[in-house]
Amino acid sequence: MPLQFESSSHGPIAFGFFNIESDLLLLENNFIFADQFCKHIMAIPETVKEAGAQDQWRVWQIKQGPKLGDLMGSMHGVIHVGFFGELYRKYPFPRQRADFKQKADGWKTQSDIATIIGKYGSEESILFRVDKGGENVQIGDYAFTRTVFNQLINYVWEGGYPKWKHGQPPAYVLNMMEWIREKKLALFSDVPTA
Image 1 (cartoon, rainbow, N blue to C red):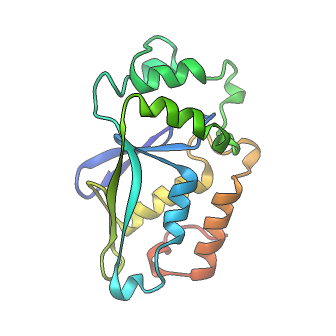
Image 2 (image 1 turned 90 degrees about the horizontal axis):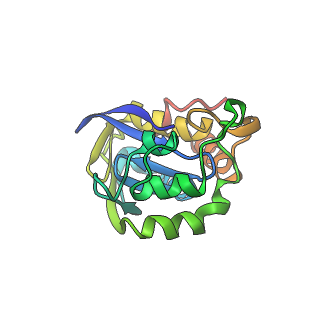
Protein backbone atom coordinates (compact mmCIF):
# COMPACT_ATOMS: atom_id res chain seq x y z
CA MET A 1 0.00 0.00 0.00
CA PRO A 2 1.18 3.51 -0.69
CA LEU A 3 1.89 5.59 2.39
CA GLN A 4 1.83 9.32 2.96
CA PHE A 5 5.14 11.15 2.95
CA GLU A 6 5.63 14.83 3.67
CA SER A 7 6.83 16.71 0.60
CA SER A 8 8.33 20.17 0.91
CA SER A 9 6.32 21.37 -2.07
CA HIS A 10 2.84 19.82 -1.79
CA GLY A 11 2.44 18.64 1.81
CA PRO A 12 1.49 14.97 2.27
CA ILE A 13 1.75 12.91 -0.92
CA ALA A 14 1.24 9.21 -1.67
CA PHE A 15 4.23 7.04 -2.57
CA GLY A 16 4.59 3.30 -2.83
CA PHE A 17 3.58 -0.07 -4.15
CA PHE A 18 -0.14 -0.53 -4.67
CA ASN A 19 -0.56 -4.07 -6.00
CA ILE A 20 1.36 -7.07 -4.63
CA GLU A 21 1.65 -8.67 -8.09
CA SER A 22 3.49 -5.66 -9.55
CA ASP A 23 6.66 -3.75 -8.76
CA LEU A 24 5.14 -0.50 -10.04
CA LEU A 25 5.51 2.43 -7.64
CA LEU A 26 3.31 5.47 -7.59
CA LEU A 27 4.27 9.01 -6.65
CA GLU A 28 0.86 10.69 -6.70
CA ASN A 29 -0.04 10.38 -10.41
CA ASN A 30 3.48 9.37 -11.58
CA PHE A 31 4.33 5.68 -11.94
CA ILE A 32 7.76 4.04 -12.20
CA PHE A 33 8.81 0.41 -11.99
CA ALA A 34 10.85 -0.25 -8.85
CA ASP A 35 13.82 -1.66 -10.75
CA GLN A 36 14.06 1.63 -12.66
CA PHE A 37 13.73 3.61 -9.42
CA CYS A 38 16.65 1.63 -7.96
CA LYS A 39 18.71 2.08 -11.14
CA HIS A 40 18.19 5.86 -10.95
CA ILE A 41 19.28 5.91 -7.30
CA MET A 42 22.49 4.07 -8.21
CA ALA A 43 23.15 6.62 -10.98
CA ILE A 44 23.53 9.48 -8.49
CA PRO A 45 27.16 10.64 -8.78
CA GLU A 46 29.56 10.51 -5.86
CA THR A 47 30.12 14.25 -6.30
CA VAL A 48 26.50 15.00 -5.38
CA LYS A 49 27.36 16.84 -2.15
CA GLU A 50 29.78 19.21 -3.88
CA ALA A 51 28.01 19.66 -7.21
CA GLY A 52 24.44 18.43 -6.85
CA ALA A 53 22.94 16.09 -9.41
CA GLN A 54 20.38 16.18 -12.16
CA ASP A 55 18.80 13.47 -14.31
CA GLN A 56 15.68 12.73 -16.34
CA TRP A 57 13.43 9.89 -15.21
CA ARG A 58 10.96 8.22 -17.58
CA VAL A 59 7.65 7.68 -15.81
CA TRP A 60 4.06 6.99 -16.68
CA GLN A 61 1.63 9.78 -15.84
CA ILE A 62 -2.13 9.52 -15.48
CA LYS A 63 -4.24 12.55 -14.72
CA GLN A 64 -6.42 12.37 -11.62
CA GLY A 65 -9.99 11.34 -12.40
CA PRO A 66 -11.69 8.53 -14.31
CA LYS A 67 -8.57 7.47 -16.23
CA LEU A 68 -6.72 6.91 -12.95
CA GLY A 69 -9.66 5.31 -11.15
CA ASP A 70 -10.23 4.68 -7.46
CA LEU A 71 -7.47 2.69 -5.73
CA MET A 72 -9.38 1.73 -2.58
CA GLY A 73 -12.58 0.91 -4.48
CA SER A 74 -10.59 -1.21 -6.94
CA MET A 75 -8.75 -3.04 -4.16
CA HIS A 76 -12.06 -3.92 -2.52
CA GLY A 77 -13.51 -5.03 -5.86
CA VAL A 78 -16.37 -2.53 -5.88
CA ILE A 79 -15.20 0.17 -8.33
CA HIS A 80 -13.73 -0.99 -11.63
CA VAL A 81 -12.90 2.16 -13.56
CA GLY A 82 -9.67 3.49 -14.98
CA PHE A 83 -6.18 2.13 -14.54
CA PHE A 84 -6.67 0.92 -10.97
CA GLY A 85 -9.93 -0.81 -11.89
CA GLU A 86 -8.43 -2.72 -14.81
CA LEU A 87 -5.30 -3.59 -12.85
CA TYR A 88 -7.30 -5.04 -9.95
CA ARG A 89 -9.59 -6.97 -12.28
CA LYS A 90 -6.50 -8.69 -13.68
CA TYR A 91 -4.57 -8.91 -10.38
CA PRO A 92 -7.16 -8.88 -7.57
CA PHE A 93 -6.46 -8.23 -3.92
CA PRO A 94 -5.67 -11.55 -2.17
CA ARG A 95 -8.57 -13.26 -0.43
CA GLN A 96 -6.48 -14.32 2.57
CA ARG A 97 -4.94 -11.54 4.67
CA ALA A 98 -1.83 -13.72 5.17
CA ASP A 99 -1.22 -13.57 1.39
CA PHE A 100 -1.03 -9.77 1.46
CA LYS A 101 2.75 -9.47 0.95
CA GLN A 102 4.66 -7.64 -1.78
CA LYS A 103 6.00 -10.23 -4.23
CA ALA A 104 9.69 -9.97 -5.08
CA ASP A 105 8.99 -11.31 -8.57
CA GLY A 106 6.58 -8.48 -9.37
CA TRP A 107 8.96 -7.47 -12.16
CA LYS A 108 7.60 -10.43 -14.13
CA THR A 109 4.31 -8.57 -14.69
CA GLN A 110 5.91 -5.41 -16.09
CA SER A 111 4.89 -6.15 -19.68
CA ASP A 112 1.24 -6.69 -18.69
CA ILE A 113 1.23 -3.63 -16.45
CA ALA A 114 2.81 -1.44 -19.15
CA THR A 115 0.08 -2.53 -21.59
CA ILE A 116 -2.63 -1.65 -19.08
CA ILE A 117 -1.18 1.69 -18.00
CA GLY A 118 -0.57 2.63 -21.64
CA LYS A 119 -4.35 2.70 -22.18
CA TYR A 120 -4.80 5.38 -19.52
CA GLY A 121 -1.61 7.42 -19.35
CA SER A 122 1.47 8.49 -21.23
CA GLU A 123 5.20 8.12 -20.77
CA GLU A 124 6.85 11.38 -19.79
CA SER A 125 10.28 12.59 -18.70
CA ILE A 126 10.43 14.26 -15.31
CA LEU A 127 13.31 16.07 -13.67
CA PHE A 128 15.19 14.47 -10.82
CA ARG A 129 17.46 16.91 -9.02
CA VAL A 130 19.54 16.96 -5.85
CA ASP A 131 20.73 20.37 -4.73
CA LYS A 132 24.35 21.17 -3.99
CA GLY A 133 24.91 19.99 -0.43
CA GLY A 134 22.44 17.12 -0.86
CA GLU A 135 19.78 18.44 1.50
CA ASN A 136 16.88 18.75 -0.96
CA VAL A 137 15.64 16.41 -3.66
CA GLN A 138 13.12 17.01 -6.43
CA ILE A 139 11.29 14.25 -8.31
CA GLY A 140 9.11 15.81 -10.98
CA ASP A 141 6.88 18.40 -9.32
CA TYR A 142 7.58 17.10 -5.82
CA ALA A 143 10.33 18.35 -3.51
CA PHE A 144 11.58 16.46 -0.47
CA THR A 145 14.08 16.97 2.29
CA ARG A 146 16.98 14.52 2.32
CA THR A 147 15.36 12.78 5.31
CA VAL A 148 12.05 12.17 3.52
CA PHE A 149 13.84 11.12 0.33
CA ASN A 150 15.65 8.53 2.45
CA GLN A 151 12.27 7.38 3.78
CA LEU A 152 11.14 6.73 0.18
CA ILE A 153 14.24 4.60 -0.41
CA ASN A 154 13.71 2.75 2.86
CA TYR A 155 10.09 2.09 1.90
CA VAL A 156 11.30 0.33 -1.28
CA TRP A 157 13.95 -1.57 0.71
CA GLU A 158 11.32 -2.89 3.12
CA GLY A 159 8.71 -3.67 0.47
CA GLY A 160 6.44 -0.93 1.75
CA TYR A 161 3.37 -2.03 3.57
CA PRO A 162 2.85 -5.04 3.79
CA LYS A 163 6.61 -5.73 3.33
CA TRP A 164 8.33 -8.22 1.03
CA LYS A 165 7.00 -11.75 0.94
CA HIS A 166 9.26 -13.99 3.08
CA GLY A 167 11.22 -10.83 4.00
CA GLN A 168 13.21 -11.17 0.78
CA PRO A 169 13.58 -8.13 -1.52
CA PRO A 170 14.32 -8.66 -5.21
CA ALA A 171 17.92 -8.57 -6.44
CA TYR A 172 17.66 -5.04 -7.82
CA VAL A 173 16.69 -3.71 -4.37
CA LEU A 174 19.52 -5.64 -2.73
CA ASN A 175 21.91 -4.20 -5.33
CA MET A 176 20.71 -0.66 -4.58
CA MET A 177 21.18 -1.10 -0.86
CA GLU A 178 24.65 -2.60 -1.34
CA TRP A 179 25.54 0.38 -3.54
CA ILE A 180 24.30 2.79 -0.84
CA ARG A 181 26.36 0.96 1.81
CA GLU A 182 29.50 1.02 -0.34
CA LYS A 183 29.27 4.66 -1.44
CA LYS A 184 28.53 6.05 2.04
CA LEU A 185 27.23 9.30 0.57
CA ALA A 186 25.89 11.88 3.01
CA LEU A 187 22.74 12.06 0.85
CA PHE A 188 21.78 8.61 2.18
CA SER A 189 22.70 9.15 5.82
CA ASP A 190 19.13 8.38 6.99
CA VAL A 191 18.90 5.06 5.12
CA PRO A 192 19.46 2.14 7.50
CA THR A 193 22.49 0.22 6.26
CA ALA A 194 22.51 -2.68 8.69
